[in-house]
Length: 61
Ligand SMILES: [Zn+2]
Image (cartoon, rainbow, N blue to C red):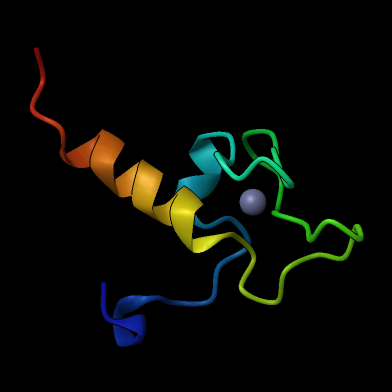
C-alpha cells in the first residue's frame, strides 16, 4: 500500500487484529511496541498490516 494513501488516524485498521510479531503481540485495539516497550513511531509493525490485509482480502468462504 502506498504510504500516501495512509492518513494519520488514532486507530489504524490493522489494530482490529492482534500483532503477529512474537516480540510484540499487541492486542486488538492497542498499538505495537518494540521489545523495549516503546511505542512504534509507525503505530504498528509492517507484518501486522500485512496480516490484516491478507485477512480482509481473503475471499469469504
Ligand atoms: Zn506489533
